[in-house]
Image (tube, rainbow, N blue to C red):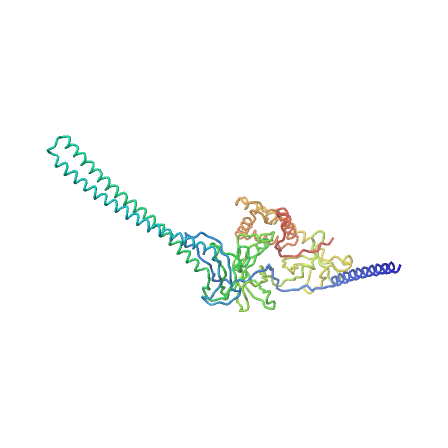
Length: 532
């Protein structure tokens, strides 16, 4: 009975504890929600920068490759992958001629041994052939001498038989003719044997020369299986086509024989990738604000020096991306290759504008933007350009106005203000729809001219086949048509249009994505809260 009572007590205590934990969680959430509702921000005024933020990797603009054996100069050696068996640590400072790495020579050592044996066989065969030929030709020359004696004997016999009966004379004449024919055949046979011997010797010598060249090439290649630094510098491992760094156990191939590089630290770049949604905003010469993860307290300036025309698909990503190279204006001794950078590409700067945080902007069911002011108004606004954090307010809000960062408590008590701006937003929406339609028609005409595959919904390029050609074609078309580029930028900067474009791309990716494939490259921008 005591056991039963203790068991009931434990159960009751457990229930009370769980209830207490749930109550604390609910109270905490309510307090957090209340705190968020009471957060305020001021509308700021000043310079507004539209940026595209990306993550990149530091690299030297120029570098010296540390390469393995060069197979291109020898047609005798079959191409093969070679494994790295030893490699100095990455970041090692080396001088010209210092040791870098060792390659696995097991397979080539065995090949060289086989080829040397073949070379020895060919040399032996040539010597045997030369001796055999000398003996054969000597026998043929002796035979010719004997046949010449036979001809002389036949001539003497014929001369001595001139007083003999006609039959004996005729027999002597026939014997002389036979002796002469035998001599002529022997001389011709000797000439043919000489020509054949010369041809055989030429073939053997050629094969021997080829084999000697092959053995020599193998020995030269094997001499390069221990690799030394071609110049002074810091060793940085080479990345292969899968973006993995080469290390001990990795392999190099005759068509990609770079083991590591020695970067020129006097000029640094950051290689990054921009989503296809934002690549049309990026252009050569734009200013870039650069942060390095390893040194968060430091910042650097740079500029875009190249933008790829053709997109590519990165591993574990759904969307196409375009390579963008940013050059740092000044270098810093603390910077090292392979460091991760945060790049903010300034695509546009606007001065003397009012702007607020994006999360403070609410969208009604009719997609009309508004904010909640501290004074109790549900202020309708007209928005303009935006970046990752803020959005420009063109109408409806004065600088210094205090607004809620998120939806306040009891939002229904806030009175609507700025109703005259509803018509402005609606007119803008109508114009943007017309611009969108015109842009779609121009893209369709360009696609027909280029005989390219379809580009999917709206202005989005699908991730499937043809997407790279369509994106490049669109960029070329916009560069040649400033008016279309301006309309396209206006569409991109419209919050509602941007949301429709992102939804269209997600729909396209869902239709084309293979089963089980995950991961995507995030685009710039934030999702806003919809208020009914």
